[in-house]
Length: 283
View 1: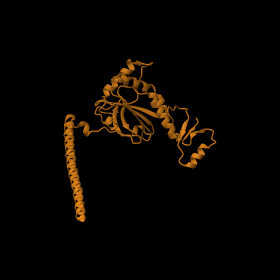
View 2: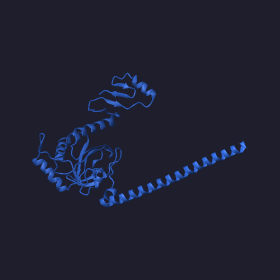
View 3: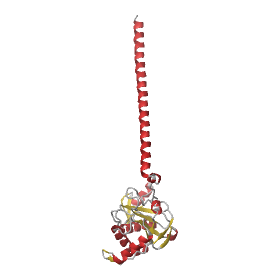
View 4: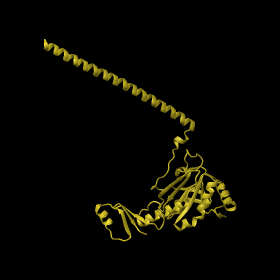
């Protein structure tokens, strides 16, 4: 009798567990179906929204995403009309550094101050084997008229009768601006932002600076960065924060424990270490 009771109890427990298991599976299946339904609804909503967005923008931005070359890339080549004649880049600048910069528009006050400052420093850049090259989405005639106005009428911070002799590229079709990522739709769809591409004698992009349309660039920083990169190239060193010509430079970190020990214990009076990974060379 007891055996029957035990068997019955055992079977009841088994059926109870089986009911729980089946109920759970049914619940999981329902959840899975609900999940699939929600995923389907989200995908349909996304597809519908993208169609509306593409229609409202005429597919222009979606089909032409903003691209830009990165540090270490070859600078995109181009041929263009400029205020100094045709420019064939990089062929015309072989063996030279190039400071290639864009500005939003001609006859604008911030750009005028920038051009006058760059022009006043042109000899300094040339002495560093660097050439200036400007660009905006304007016609060659607008460029010429603006540069003549600067020379004939504008006086700023003691600078007057300033003649802009470096080339200013006309890019009405925005082909070059798009190649370099100078045109950024959320800032403006018809004016280039204030970009600076610092390109070395091998036509490699070495530094990129971006400023908004509202704020002028620091030309002294452009020159300082050029000097720093040239120093790094010649002596295989790095430069610390706020480095200026004549300041101490940083020796590359050692690649082994033995080298680290030798460097820290070095008797070279021109080298001093703050720690094994941070050693400077006096200038």
